[in-house]
Every structure is written in structure tokens, then in C-alpha cells.
Image 1 (cartoon, one colour):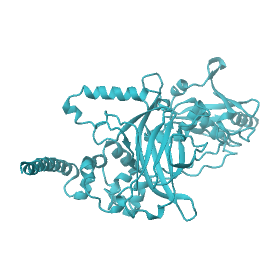
Image 2: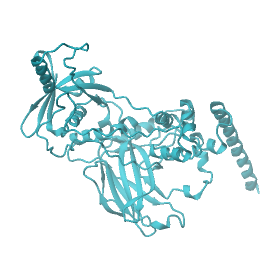
Image 3: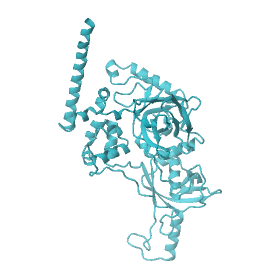
Image 4: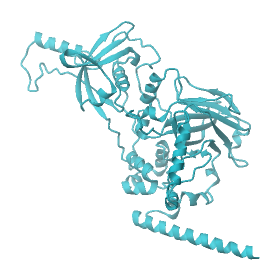
Length: 501
């Protein structure tokens, strides 16, 4: 009898505390966003109510995730509440990911007794690196010939069928599996986070990666193209045993914090549950030059003829823009959010049109989505492009010499702009993000429509005409919008030396 009386008292205390916290949070939101700006269901979808929302029944059964993926590695204890979990991995070590069938009885009957395909990717977490992913991976490939970023440990894996690794996609693997059977795949990540940092002087922080899994079912033609589910988690990769040392360091730091400070951080979980996300877009890179792994058919190259307009190089297609317009309908706005990897906020913005989203201020978006995703969404709404870190201009020397010879043979009165016959030298802009010699080689090769491997070395003409080998440090000290004349020296086997003058 006494035990029966204690339960209501405990429930009253818990309920009272939750109601007070809930009311206090609501009052803060009302002050920031204005009264009546959002409905109660919208407010409950805010990140600050993430844990409370998980206990609420879903609006419809279709929102129950059909699959769940669990990475068998502990999460870091040094992650604040409501931030995404972070998991440390050792380079080259095999880690199990359990593929769990989470369907209810009668859900997705079309895949009963059939196989599904899952694609695993290791991608960059930072948007800055996502923009230059192709160049980053190509640079890694040059430094680590024959190695892969992601591999499957097939002997240790269970239940996977027809595992494949495309030799041109070093960060991607795929396989088939039966949801009705036990399936565990062991993956190995061979790159480390510090390989993609800007300056490597020791002690720098490594960049975070993401492990993403996209699962598809068969269509009528037997192709695995119909998307079922996607999930991902944030990781950092260290040299062997480095992840264990980092986990221990984080744990010791947390033990030194006061109990009040510890309440602001998540506990460390033994496993990492991948959270739902948008499917990874299939990106086709616009690159007319052959891959560094293949030989180019060009025996010579030129930036242009006559007035310097490019030849032997088709005009690149205009960049594909995906800006949100004020005329966008709510349904189209939902699709835009999915395409730009804001799926977690589609429920919150269900009835928002393009005009509604564009009216949100930066503070509004950060309050609704949190600092990280809020800034990303605000920049996407405004269509902001990332400015390159360095811009230089180049022109081929042979063109200038030919133009000068023509001017000397046919001297005429100069125009006001200082050009003769109205001719002028055309320079090509090169935009650099990483400020490395590898990136500059790729950009010059792309201009000439040749393979980067055909460029043996790049030099800069120094004092008294000496040739100084281009290095990362030298590029980092280039002046913004510096102009260079390119001189080419052909070697054997269709390879060249490039001299910047």
C-alpha cells in the first residue's frame, strides 16, 4: 500500500519539473520569435525539445524508420547536450556496423524475401571541404597511391552479399543484404583527420568526417535505385591507438569538471546510433581532363589562338543553381530542403513557402535550427557562394609573344586604352581553396584539358631568371589577383614543365 502511494508523489514531482521547464522554454521562444509566429507542434520540433519529443507518439506510422544502423564504437563524453555525437576511430581498424531491420509487421511488404542494397560513404562533415571534395580526394590519392579511404573487412562481416568497391570512388563501398537475416559489416577507414588540415605543423586539430549509409530497394527493372532510408554519424579518425588516447583524454577532462558543468554534456555511450539524414546526392564532376590515373591523348596544349579565346576546350556548362525563390510552393520548398540536406527540419517547415522561408532573419533560423545548421540554412536561403581563398590570373607566353610580333610588324596608332589594333591579352582566372601545389597543378591541367600527371613540375621565375620550385608555402604567400605568364617546356612522353613568370 505504501509503495502504491509513492508513485503518484514521484510522478507529481517529475511532472511539475517538466511543466516548469517547458513553460520557461516556451516563454523564451515567444520573446525571440514573436507571439503567434509558430504553432505548438512547430515549437515541439525545435532542437531544445528533442528528448521530450522522442517520447511523444509519431503523427503517422510512416515516420517510423525502417532500418537502424549501429556503429560499435563509443561516443565522446566531451560533446554538449543537443549537439551531434562524435565518435573516434583508429586508422585501419575494423569496426562493426550492425544493420537492423526496424520495420513493424506489414511495413514495406514489397521487400519481404528480397535483398536491398546499402552504399557506405566516408565524406567530409565541414561544408568548406564538401565544396572541394573531388580535389581533396584526388590529392589524397596522389599521396597514397594504391590505397583506399574506405574498405570492407569481408572475412569478419556477416550476411553481406556481392560486396563491391569502385576503384574510382575511394571513399565508397556497397553490398546487398537481406533485412530478415542478421547482417553486420566491418569497415576500415584508412585516412586520418589531420591529412586534410590546412597547415601541418604538428598539434593541429583534425577535420571531422561522416559515415553515411544509403539503402535502396529494387525497381521494376531490377535496379537498386528506389531510396528507402539514409543515416549518418560524425567521426574523427586517428593514427593507430590514437582514438583510444583521445577518448581517455576526454574522459579525464570530464572527470575534472564540476557536477554542474557535467550536466551540460552528453554521457559517453558504448555504441553510436546513426541518425536519419538526406540521401547523399550523386554528383557528377565537370572535369574535361582525364583522371590522374589515365594517360592523356593530347601531345601539346594551348590556352588559345588569335585573340586568346580558348580552344581544344569546350565551354563549361553554366553552374547549376538551386536557389529558393519567393514563388516556391510549400511542396517545392520541402523538396528543396531535402536536396540541400535539411531533412530534419522538413516537419518544422511543413507549411512554409519560399517567401516564408526567405523572410526569416539570421537570428530566427539559428534559434529554430541551432547554430551550426542555422547558419548553413541561412546561407543556403540567401544563395551565398563561398569565396575562394586566392584568385590568380594566367596567360600563356606564346600568345603574348605572337601578339607582340604582330604589333611590331603592323604598327598603328594606339587606342586610348593603350592597346594596338584593339587587341588585348586574355587571362584565365584560377580559384584556389586549399592553397597547395597539388591543387594548382589540377587547376592548370584543367585549363589545358590535360591530365595533371602530364605536368611534371611547376616553377616560379625568381630573381635573375632562376626557377624556384612551387611549394605550398609559396602559394600561400601569393598576392591576391596576382598575374602570371605561363611558359611551357615539353619533355618526353607528353609531359611538361610549367614556369610562372
